[in-house]
Image (cartoon, rainbow, N blue to C red; front, side, top):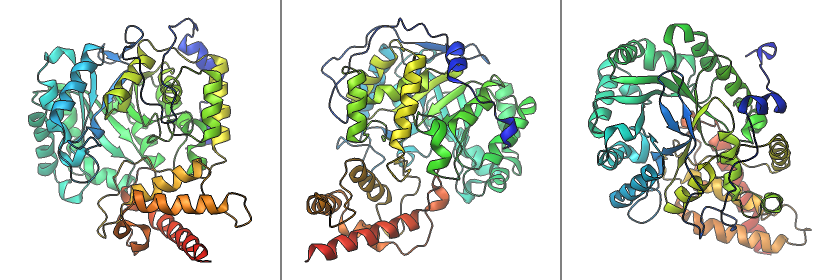
Length: 464
C-alpha cells in the first residue's frame, strides 16, 4: 500500500457523495450505559435500502449477522457449548423480515458450526424472494484446503440453508494467517476460486466477494484483479474508531478509510462488519457516554456507530449480530430510516475517536476465532474484562492514587466472577496456537502474560 495511492476522502466530499439533507426522522432509544434496550418497541418509519449496482438487489441497510444467535440459556451460542434457541431465532428472523430486514449473513464456522442450520430453518419459513442469504467458504483449517473438502463445505452450506442458490458468497477471512501463501492454498492452488466463479456463471451464486482481515497485500492484490474476478461486493471492518486509528491500535491492521476508498473508487459495493468493534463502541468510557448523551440524550450510544457506518454512499448493508430482541429494536430505530451524519456530526465522532484513543484497550472484538484454547483458557473473557475495567477507570496504576484500593478490589473480584480460575491467564504456556486465528492480529500470549503479571501484582499488594 503506497501513500501516494491513498484516495483520502474529506468530510465535505464524503458528505457531498452521501447527499445529506439533515431532514430524516429523529431516533428514539434508551439511556442506560450498555444502551441496547428501550421502552419504545417500534421503529420510527420505513427501512432504508441500498441498491446493489452489480445485480440491482434492493438490500436493507441493516443486515442481520448470524454469528451470535441466542442460546437456550439466553446468551450468545458462541459461548461455551450451548444449544441454539431455535424458537428465539425464528422470532428474531420473523420480526426482522416484518420490519424490512432482508440480508442475513452466516458461515459454516459460526456458533460452532450450527449457525447455517438454525438460519436455514428460520428463513425457509418465508418466501425465498423475501431475503438474501450471505454465507462463506470458511475453509480455515488445512484439512479443508483440498478441492474436494472445500466443495463439500460449499454444498453443505446449500443443504443447511435449505436453498439451491446463495445470494452473497464470500471467500472468508482473506489476509488472515500467512497472508498470500494461505490465500493461494485456500483458493488458488486447489482451483476453488475458479470453481466459485463457474458457480456464479451458472447462477447458483448470485454475488461473489470476500471478507477482509489482516494482510493488506492480499486486499490490494485482489482489487488489482478486479477486472478478472469482477467482485460483486467486499466485506470490511469499518467504524468511527477504525476509520483513522485501526493501524495505530494495531500496526498490522489497516485504517478503514483506506479500505473503503479503494473499494469506492472501483464502484464495488461494501458490506460492513464490526460497526460496534465487538461491542466496544456501545460500552464506551463514562466520559464518552456523557459526551454522546449531551449531544443526543434520546439516541443510543450504539446508534452513533451504526449511523456512521451506514452514512457512506457505497455501503450496501451494515451487519449486526443481534442476540436479543432489544438489539434488533434499537437497530431498527436507527435505520428506519437512516438519519445520515451531518458534516458537523462526522467531525464530532472523529473527535470522539481521538478522545477514546487515550484508553489503551486491547483490540479484541470477541469473535472467538482464537478459541478453543487447548489449555482451557477463556481468552476473550480475560481481554474483555481488562478493557471494561480500563474504560471504567478501574485499572489501578499506583498505590498513591486516591481510588487505588477500590479499583484493585473491583478488578480482582470482577476477574474471578468473569473468568473461572482454571481458565484465567495464569494458565497460558505461550503455545501461540491462538494468535494466527485472530482477525485483529493481537499477540495474545503477550497480552495474557501481561495481564497475569498485573493480576499477580494486585494480589500481592492486597496482602499488605
